Image 1: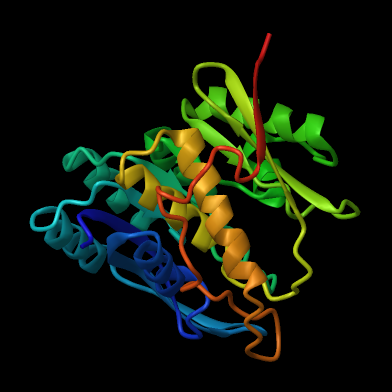
Image 2: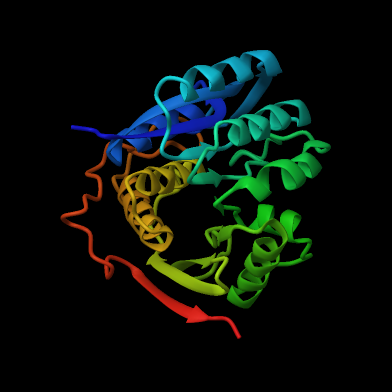
Length: 284
């Protein structure tokens, strides 16, 4: 029986592979009851995004009120925020309801290359929303924008970017290294507010269908935080789940296809801290 709850605040993906749809699938697979507040409706599929329509600030505000005042979420994942007005609503409601375990996936560009946030909204994101997060999960291009680094080409750069963002926004930061090419393995780094960091290394999976991987990972992390796992363990479990969802080899659509979210999830009974390679090093 599911006992824990999580909320996703994000855009809708009509093809079901990313956004709200991916978030709710991942939350269910990871053993929590998922709820949603939609920021925008997108017309998209595995080949790209055709059009986007934002919801009104009032509708977003009402959605959040109805969730928080009835089934209080034990964790919140924030994805596509789209523009300044919606970011203000999200930030205000997270404060009003004293939301906890906030995971922000700073969605800026879709896998297909379509821009998913207004250029002016990045400043609002940095000032109003990221400082409220417990964890942010940027990929390499997003980390470059948020850290101000002109290049992130190796693990040293990743750690430098994570540290800059962590100190700037006062939260934990997971920089995802999947965009770096050439290695047989992929490394992500977690910078924590206690000035320590963890590396997570896993083998690259030969599957071009990666639509919604960022949404899925951040939602899985939020799910495990909702269930009471410490940050570093929640991330490790979520990465293990994501790897299985990619390795399942679902092959749908004409472009970068979706994952199989309902792969066997990572239960507490089967989890081991050795399930992927990670190590903790204090920063001097």
